[in-house]
Image 1 (tube, rainbow, N blue to C red):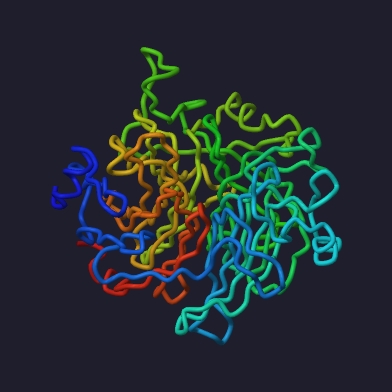
Image 2 (image 1 turned 30 degrees about the vertical axis):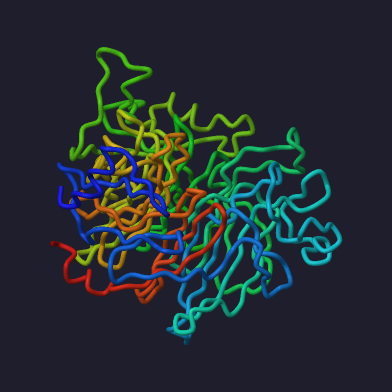
Amino acid sequence: MKNASAAALAFGGLRQSGAQAQVYAVDPQRGMDRFGQLHRDPAGILNLPAGFSYNIISRTGDPMSDGLITPSAPDGMAAFPVANQPGKSLLVRNHELDSLGEEVDAFGGSEALARKHVGKKAYDYFHRKLPVNGGTTTLLYDHVSGRVERSHLSLIGTARNCAGGPTPWNSWLTCEETLVTAAQGFGREHGYLFEVPAAHKGLVDPVPLKDMGRFLHEAAAVDSTTGVVYLTEDFDRGLFYRFLPRQPGELAKGGTLQALVIRGWASADTRNHTATEIKSDRMLMPLDKKFECEWLDLDAVTAPDGDLSERGALAGAAIFSRCEGVAFALRPDGQREIFFAATGGGPEQLGQIWRYQPSLYEGTVREKEAPGTLELIYESRHRAHLEACDNLTVAPWGDLIICEDSYSADPTMVNYMRGLTPEGKIYTLAMNAHPDKGEFCGACFSADGTILFVNIQRPGMTLAITGPWGSLRNTANS
């Protein structure tokens, strides 16, 4: 282990100091030390490698340009270019709220302000009073000044907007990770995707994309070459989905929802759990082996009983443990890859990273001639290497950036951002040093690759991280 001091902390207990102890280590089999030791942040916010720095650009409770309040629980997020302004980024940011707990809403609890500002553009109201708190905010950020120039509420009335994904046509797909209904005080069913154009000023019309299914949506990734959308489900017996739109780029026109099936292995349980549900003859999913895949058409996708994944698994779909982040990568050689995280997968339930490589004929009648493949490329065996992998993004130099989302009761629990190379080597990029130990979420790079934006959900802040990102393009294969 190259990072000897960090490894000693990981396996030998915590060192008491003015900031959180660092408990990461280099995986001796599948790890690397791309950046070296993290440096302790005197402000107690974010520990980073030498040469990197951060700027807090937004906090829960900050006033926004539209006169409202920045809501709490920032989560999934994407950065978009600004037309004719290369030094700026538009950020569309989720807020994982559902009106059921103690939350900071955009209206400060004022029903009068909410109705005046929202009009008819709230998807739903809670107990017919305030709009349901979940939704998105949009920020215009200037790279040079390091300041947010404009911010506003862009979607409201949705619930538990967890992650989502950017589209090639510069919109954000925001996902509801809930199935709440009138039984919990809501006016409508939830569990859908909504689309938010990045450049839209003000509130968008909240149109649920019902053909994309009603389930515990987590994230979405769009293949820019085909328009196919891949979807994850945050459920311990969840499925991995794809959506074939009738008209690529126009998701509201509907399409077909399908679930992944491993060819020759019906209802495959990929979770590799060793403590529960084990049979002596059960096959475990090995690392680095490619399995050919098929796709199963799903019916009754709005699933009023919330049983879509159960019906899909019974029909042969593969089962995953809490799929969360998903990201699309287009390699220089034209190879397309879909990465997704199974937060609870593996023998220690610490997390798995999967790679799906689409067929040359993905989503067409010729797909069976050259089926897509599924491969388990990383599975954590120790929390010092990776724990609770969640949101994902692909870095400009080709690595996968992983946000950790652990709420373990272990006193040594710390959330990190990790990196994973295309060859399956994992490393540590950053550490949350804040005493609240909140999850990282919403990691995304500016279009020019100079800034990594990320959220820390609790206490609620959005950060812009700068450093020698450009040099990594030349060392990506080191």
